[in-house]
Image (cartoon, rainbow over the protein chains, first blue to last red):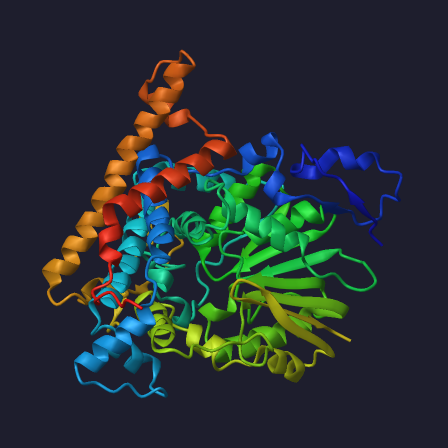
Length: 402
Length: 115
């Protein structure tokens, strides 16, 4: 059993957390480290902060994010103006029109079209700034990863001959090369995620803070035993590493289809001194034994895979969890969750289509609108499933294996 | 949907890439503003904003260094790390600049409705 304790401020909130070994608790106890990610001590913040190699490219990427935040809220009355434009053009919009039809209708309004254009242009420019910066250092980064591939404390498993499913080979979010097609895809994803996750003013590490928060909020088995944790579709590995910070005694794994992703994740954890294991494996075929894990989780994995893959992944999570184990995939709200709120207005539908079709969220509609996650979990065998809103557009869905 | 996969070299710069062939998105082929030239110019205008801010950012840091009697060399500017408070100020400055320069793009084209 772990014993909760307040350890903040946790100046050495990283590798090993040696200060905690002075605990009077039995050494077999699983420690549960509490911290406030948004009030990181300076030392921890310094270690966790990331910035592109050149200030110029980082500054440009920051600007495109700020542009989106600043202008996004300035399109008041857009729904009414689109309706007015359509009326002026003698077009009667069917309120039950499809997402694609809504997009075509909304584009007839010049203000909507400009909003769509600038959003996508900002996204394209952000990716260019990040990719250009990383690729100017490509030789150096790849050479460094070659060294750290063989270093610990955690293990790295690469499977270059693995059959990579077709559905994973798209440029999701129009990320250049997608998750699997660029040798620096892990870094590109990591810096891009900072751009998406502008919840904090601490722009140089805010996505780290988000993952640390998700780890702090992670549901645990009722018996309190947390010895093994798996993060499926770990990408650049922030959730897995954040779970290691919370549960320093647990064996933590992150798996992902992308070799460049897990290499980046491993390289980062080597530098942070965090004992996290990363492997290039599929979430629907993890290769782990039955009943192996206490917690299985993921962060925004499911809306990037097909509905068919989601069913296989949920079944795999059930198989590898031990009785009493907890499955908590963090992702957007789906049908079947009381918090689900489908796009209704014309501009909401059009924006959903834009995200799917032009931000290249290829599988997101299969997830949000056609995958009843709580029911899929029950069908897989999970005995207890709870579903509610998590904040933002995410659903908080937790399943326990009986 | 793209027709074919973009090929990826298994080795670049004498390093294994561990990367895989992928389907390239066609978003850069889209035209939403009547003419591809207008779409392109919006992207160019936004890119210029990023470049202007990048220059301004260096200037801000150079001034900070000068206040501390530290030489504003390239190395010192690149190595500068802001405090959380400075990051908040920079974010506000970027958003102010974005609104000042690009706010026109959001203007309503409908006549004002007076009550």
